[in-house]
Image (tube, rainbow, N blue to C red; front, side, top):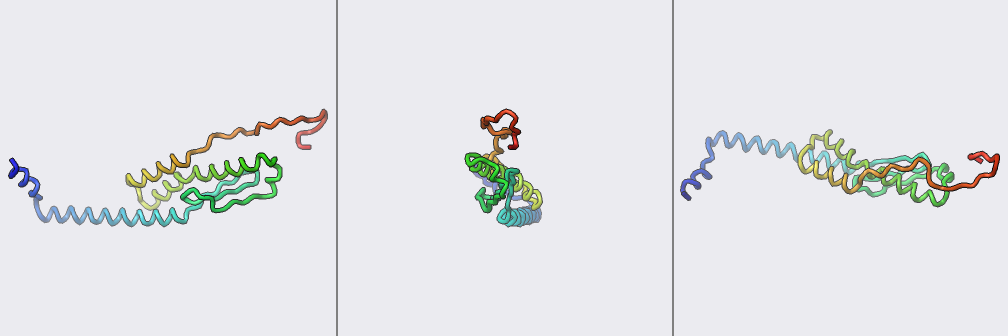
Length: 151
């Protein structure tokens, strides 16, 4: 029985066919490596910017690190208690777009393999989409009779 198994293992078939298969496998591996290197280069330079109408703009890199934070004078319309959460929400929204941007880069470079799909899924888990925000913050304001809300 051992001899039969050994001969089946050693039976590689036609040497020319085996050489053709190995050449094809080598070509596919070179293509995969080239597309993966292109994807990594694209990811290195990737910046995702999210802008909040309250006057905040946050930019993150593919690792989710904040690379730029810009505020405009418009942010002064927020109460001091609203500024921090507004900035953090803007950063979170930018981070939640990393997976989609990485997927787009993968499609452009032809990197569509299990490893790439795993990386995209790990970005989705690490930086999930934020919960929808309430359109109006819960702040109670007392207004005088005849006072307009913009006053």
